[in-house]
Image 1 (cartoon, one colour):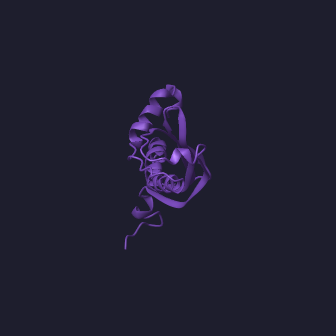
Image 2 (cartoon, one colour):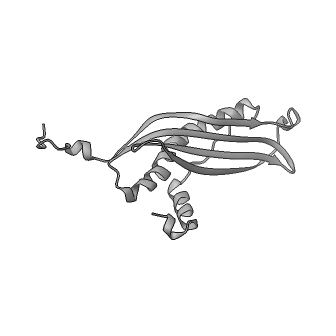
Image 3 (cartoon, rainbow, N blue to C red):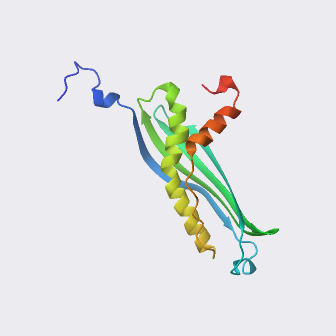
Length: 156
């Protein structure tokens, strides 16, 4: 047991990141050309877009939304399209202010991504196609790209 003379213990001062909850905010899947689009042998072109957003809920709680949009096309025909907003509420304590943005925009989506990946794979499979297994995402690179696009006064 550590004596702290009435102040917070060393453990209480350690940076903490915990998941309060996670959920699907929005999910849509379209398969507009079925059943013709389900014919085997088509090698689709697949395009994916990934975005991360955050919304403070309290001094310690932040909602982070991972938005994944994608479509598969063969020639000029849409085979399927999806749009998923998968979110989590994270409780963040004792993280220095200068590191908070990086934690929210890198670590939080990294924790959400495996669940979002599974939801998309299952949804695409249930749409009649082979499961779409998304490659891992480098959220550090996404964060750096986003920071490079922002004016310097907004990066703090």
